[in-house]
Image (cartoon, each protein chain N blue to C red):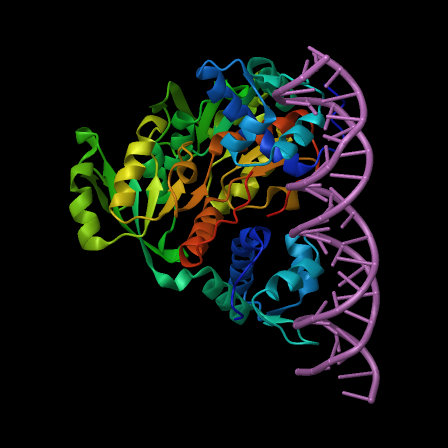
Length: 217
Length: 217
DNA sequence: TAGATTGTTAATCGATTAACAATC
DNA sequence: TAGATTGTTAATCGATTAACAATC
């Protein structure tokens, strides 16, 4: 793998999609694939696939194509899936609970370490094997477990305060389901915003003005 | 509003974000805003804001700026928020339930018309005022209510079959939380893919290679 | 009127696509 | 070797940014 400096964010956004398709091919028992065949499956150009991959290294073989398993492992390494990042969920409302039992953190280089809520009625309730804890335990928990990623599932009103606490406890990466602009208020944080409301509005636009020109990420 | 032909998908993806920021400004009681001030709030260039808006019409006034309320209404019209699209949720597992009680469909030009699941244990359970129905009622329900949008919260295995049924029942727009590629298998459908797993992987990448170069949508 | 700020054209930048030599 | 397909350079396309005349 080449040193990964100055990779375009568009390339980065496509990596998980490559990883996903290669996983499917692997499950189907495919050993090799050409950029051309993959391009048809993914509905992007073969040129783009080769360009994207060559940002990180030459993973193919002329005249043959790409070995599915090796390529998938390379992309896994590029994303950093092996690192095993500890994750905590903040907010155990229905969204926090849905994330907890729908997302396979383990498949994505993460370990769900704990789920927290300020509502005493939820404390002790078990979701997907995890007991909801009081947010009062957060400081001690972070000191002991050193989680790296927080999933923010709290309402907008509490988002700022919760981020403030988490950052002081050493968390620098957020998977943000609230509409609070974390990176506008705090420096040196990694944020991935979900914005489901915006996603729905994009669909509403398409309902009214149907078009095929989607951004394929 | 100009005829909205050939609008770049990048512009479209930014519309909900403009709408959201203008909503916040409106709540703060702001009457007018310049592209320059809005650009600082949103962390994009003023040039981009003016270019984006002028795809649809000249909503500002030289020497003054933009009237917040009017501009917001214009964007609302461009997206088509007034249309009131009927929405059904397919799959009432924790994700379907979380969507049901976390997303304000009403604020986004939609009415949640029904939530369906094949699991008899869930039938009758009420979430956010909606009683989970059996999928056996789906055909009759669609004939009577004519919903336009389906939220797909079923597991990958059932996704294809469910889409097939829904399309036959006249649904052409999908908010897709499964990893099934609807638009690869069916023609003339509007699809907005959520892909939470990919979103998490993007964050994992950032954790390992922190960078500021995010795509600001 | 002078100042401010838009709407719009032109310039730049970067992403995507095409082409092809290298090579398995 | 001949055929296939990559890696990489060059060409194109389109998105973003800058500049400024129009105008409120």
